[in-house]
Image (cartoon, rainbow, N blue to C red):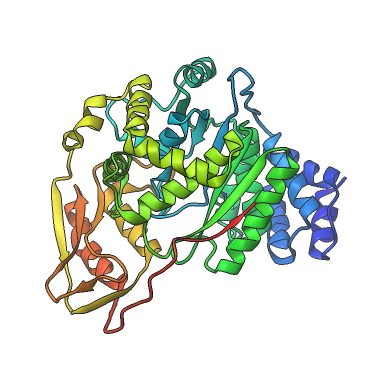
Length: 433
Ligand code: URA
């Protein structure tokens, strides 16, 4: 087999066989196929697409390129969730303990933030002492004992995806539905859960800018999951507006604690209830209304919050910070951004807000970059709110004095203020199962 022929075939819009796809994935992981040929193939896939069979074969080849996590040592059904990435998306911190508190098993490997989107692992590490690396044996034992563990994704989980993702990032081939679908599902399939709930984000702050593209991606993801024998459900949700009012690692943990205590903002609370309901419905094989009742009860009776504390304690985090979130260190500068005009916030650009938060220190451009857990943005006004000239729109939290002026300017640019009141946006557009 020759890589040249595989590229030519995809360039000419022909279907690749399972063997050709495996030849590419395995050869690229072993450094036997160079970046320039892999880039050419990725661009041909980007331009000409893939059939469902090809996407499934690519997914399985990437999943099989590293460790396939064996969760058979955990008693009961295991359920996983994944978000395609958003701004202020701290749902895993909330949903995982809710679901575990009603008896489902959550053995979760989470990623780190890259670019303008955050990652659960970084958020958890903002809690003093929290260990995101655990030996497999301890990970499995913990889930058997308390029903939940959230650790960082192992380097050897779908290594082909890691390598291909990096190449996509520099060859303008990220926004391809077959490539995104296989990237996400290879990791989910290698993670070993029985059920998967996906949060496919659409809008300004997401990879899928339109509902139609998001729906196409959701259909592919669900199809691949089901073909791999894992019952999969995808929610298509709004990412025009950041989720909740906090963006940045420890700020988001504090907001997650509020939701777990029943005191969180409506948008974030509602989306977490939807996601958790789908997870419980699948895992317990019960109808949606019964699942929703269990989820809401776990928040109102405190069991979800207690499960989060148990998780933190088990992974050596300082639980007193969870009980008293004022103990999280604060940034040195906490700067107000005021409106220079009156009107309704007509639009907020979630992607720009995510990037501003990174510039304040909350994110990383490269894997090796250090992040500042206390940095980020507290949004005081969101889309649909009326503001008067001089009202405070947001607070920028940072230790980087030099970043403040530009961040303030950019924050104002990220908002569109108008005389028109925007229509209320839906939070969940559709559910694909
Ligand atoms: N998330 C992933 O894991 N992969 C993609 O390609 C896009 C989002």
